[in-house]
Each structure stands twice: as C-alpha cells, then as structure tokens.
Length: 441
Image (cartoon, rainbow, N blue to C red):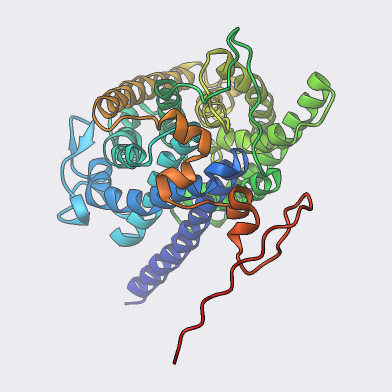
C-alpha cells in the first residue's frame, strides 16, 4: 500500500511539473507573435497577431483530432501512428506519468510551435485563409509524421537518432517548411532591386521584438526542461543550465560578430543570435557538457549572422530570419550531438557512428518536409491562392484581411479618435467634429 502511495505521489508531481512546463511553452507563442510583429511593418501587425493566435488555437484542435494519433498511435512500419485520434483507443504508447491528458497538452504546445515558425517567413504577403490550411497540414501530416519517427518510437529512434527536445523534429521541420513557403510566395514588393540588390525593409518595433525574444528565452526553460519527462532533478537542472548558457552566448556571439563585421552592434541580429543558440542546444541539452553547450551556442550565434544574408542571396524573402534561426541552426545543433555527446560523440572517442545517424536524420527530415511543403503550396496556389494582391500588400494586410488596423492612429490620424485632439502630429488644425444631433424626448 505504501509503494502505491509513493508511486501515486511521484506521478502527481510529474504531472504538476509537466503542467508548469506546458505553461512555459505556451508563453513562447506570445513571444513568437511579438518577434514577428516587431520585425515587420505596422500595417501588418494585426495580421501577424491573428496568425499566431490561430496557430495556437486551431493547431491545438487539429493536433488533438489527428496529429497526436499519427505521432503516438500504433505504428505502421515505423512511419506513422494509426489510432488514438481525438485521444481515443490509443495503443502502442505509454503516456507520461500515466496521464494521456498531460502528455497531449505538453506535446500539443510543441506542435503549435512547429507550425508558427512558418508564420514569420510568410509574413506580410500571404492570404490568411491559405495560412489556416498551413496550420492544419503542419499539425496533422507534417510535424506528427516526423515526430513519430523519433519520439513515437519509429524507425529513426530504432537507429539511435538523438533529438532531446526538437532541434530537428520541431525547429528544422518548421524551418524547412518556412523556406519552401517563402520561396513559393515570392519576395515582398521592394525587397529586391531590379539588379538583385537586397533592400532592408525595417520592422516597426525593435522593443516588441526584444520582448518577444525574452519571452521565448523564458519559455525555452519549459521547452527543454520539460522534455526530461520525469522528476529527475539533477538532469533537469543540467538541462536548464545548458539551455541558459547556449542562449546567452548565442546573443553575445552575434553581437560581437556584427560589431566586427559591420562596425555596429546589430540589435536584431543579436536577438536572433539568442534564439539560434537556444535552437542549437535543444537537440543535446541532456547529453552535452556546459562547455559543449557554450560552444554550440556561440557557433549558432555566428552561423545565423552568415545564414540570414545567404537566404537573401537565394532571393528568398524571410522577414524574421526563421529559416536561418530554426532551419539551419536546428540542423547544426542536431549534428553537434554527434560531435560533442559526452560519451558517444566524436570529441569523446565515440567514433563517427552517432554523427552519421544524426546526419541521416537531418537529411530525411529535410527531404520529407521539403516535399510535403512543396505539395501543400502547389495545391493551395492552384485553389485558394497563396498571395494577396499587390494593392492589398501595399495598403497592409490588417485592413484587407481583417477589416481593422493594428495601429489605427497611424492610418487614420486624429480621425481614429473623434473625441480626441483636433490636430495632426505636424500641427495643422483639423476641422472640429460635428456635434451629435439632439433627439427629442
């Protein structure tokens, strides 16, 4: 009886721990929304927020109905699950702490995170209705299949592929899909000159982006720390420290690289450096030393500074650097596990076996997601269409897609506030607002 009580207590503590981790990952979604909004123009801010809200809301429902079963149901040939849809009749999966509910909730936050990576790369020119289909496909047929290969016990897991919290399963998946969608959409108007010169289209709020990155950093402690999936305090602590060190050094590396390369400390690139370091350590936060975590964080912080202009040179317009942060640094972090794993890595005398498996995982996930995303874009382009009209892009997606402005005073001036000041910012007097007609009693 005492043994059952202790087991029950441990299960309840694990559920509580995963509840906190789920909340932390949830907080990453406001972080993504603010990063994307700040790095794009004010005329599209409401559209950015709406996409991120619906990625979480609609994505969670789709993952509940379809995705979780494909990821964790009874496997077909090690490729995808075949039952457990809507969490019913699930076999072949032992839920964490015996609770299917908390298991789904935590994994559902991850599914929405994968889909929202696409939002940033598609910003400022994609039809909202088509993006809703992107959410549905990413959370039902793309991310869950890749997840089944590793976390669902599929064929990559059988080969010994390691991805602790998702440098490949989440971030590379989202980054590859983002690249494909951005390529199909084409660049924003004015991004590239006729001679191919890259033009910077500045975002409207660095403070919003910085707040978003700090929220993401905060949430990453649940993203990585929660992925231990057990009340192992020592391992959780090690994972949290490795996560913190990698994110911190990633921002430092990007800041100093841009200072040496361009003569200034670039704020936006430094913010992406933090995210790059976090993405890089996510695959191996449980098996890297603190030195190994610092190394991958610093490397990712520099690589993202090189990758962003590389994507531009490929004539793919990624307004927030999602492809570079999540795609390229996700692959980098996954490969780093094969190099710096503290027992099986190349640097620790483990040979090249693990590195080879890691490289295979990166290659097959890139290929599958790339093909799936391309098919998705082809179908959407032929049916609903992918891109808004030129007029809608010029005037902003806020008013055309949602019938409102994110910042009405920027578009309407004092007319946005009929009872407020009667002057323009530059000073000219405005005509007084007409007095309301009196109604007879």
